[in-house]
Amino acid sequence: AAPAPAAAPAPAAAAPIKQVSTGVMPSLFSQLTETGTTLGGSTGAKLMVDKDGNRYVVKRGASPEHIASEAATYDLYRAAGVPVPQTSFQETLSGPVLVSRFIDGRTLGSLRGKELDDAITKINKHFVVDALLGNWDAIGMGRDNIIIGKNGVPYRIDVGGSLAFRAQGGAKDFGFKVGEIDTLRTSRDGAPIFGKLSDKQVGEQILALHNR
Image (cartoon, rainbow, N blue to C red; front, top):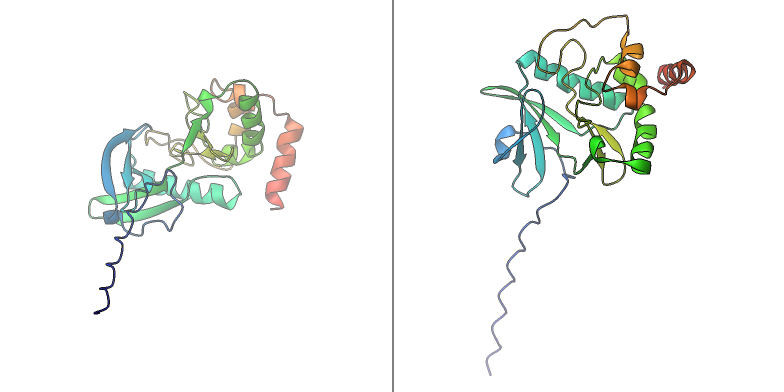
């Protein structure tokens, strides 16, 4: 008898929709597709996906200089050992964009009790970096500029209000004097999070950062 025909190969399984991007950052903005979802933030941000369903946050900022400054701020946070999303600064025909990994988690403002206390302890460890970068909106009006990831790590996001820019793209003073060492601990949004840090603790953070 003739041999039975070989079975047809099973179709390849569809790529799963991932909750958090873990692969290589897309090198081209054109590889991303809009979802129709606009996220928060002072200058607007869009949620986009790649062909595998990985989610990314895409921003243009208030100006090319503003979004370039935000990209540089992420790099500086990362160099200082502060958890931030992985980012990619890309040029497009309509101007530069900042692509960052979507962090799946909860905003700081949604936490209560021990969860909040634990998050504040972790956030305070990097207070001096927030101050040195002039990140006036490190916490955010709704405590939504820090996302607590599924791993319990607080991530700084939406850092456009750092260095020489305000969150909406206006200019602000930024130089050798770091007044944020004091103002971030006494401001309406900063005091509930940073207000208990002593001068001694701040000094220890400065020394640790210097020796990093």
